[in-house]
Image (cartoon, rainbow, N blue to C red; front, top):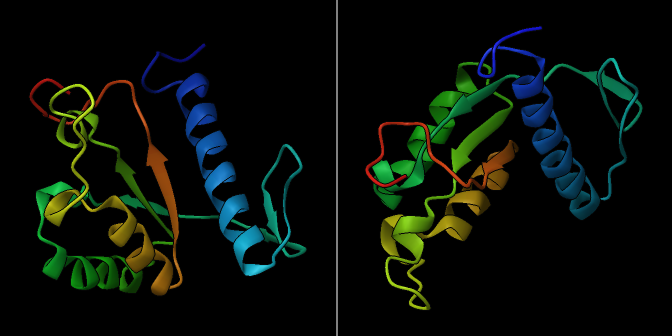
Length: 132
């Protein structure tokens, strides 16, 4: 058995999240996504997806296109990001999805560049984030 962070449990959860996001993207694009216990199969072709992190609130919306483009040039297929709930709902019932917090705009930019997105929705951010 591996450790909590490096073991199969963590990899399985990440794979499940990627499968959900890739499947959702494929449905929107009219594709077919399955998983056979060995790999993802997208439109009948086995895929090995490489993921990299870009945390949208740590850069400006003007930077997103360039950052995502550079990740794509480097061979990344999936952009992974946390959803920073303490930014989006800093006070109960008051939501902010503007500027650096515009998650929808960020995901649309990922999609526009032909990449998949993997959202890490929480409940905790393990990335040097105060009150994460």
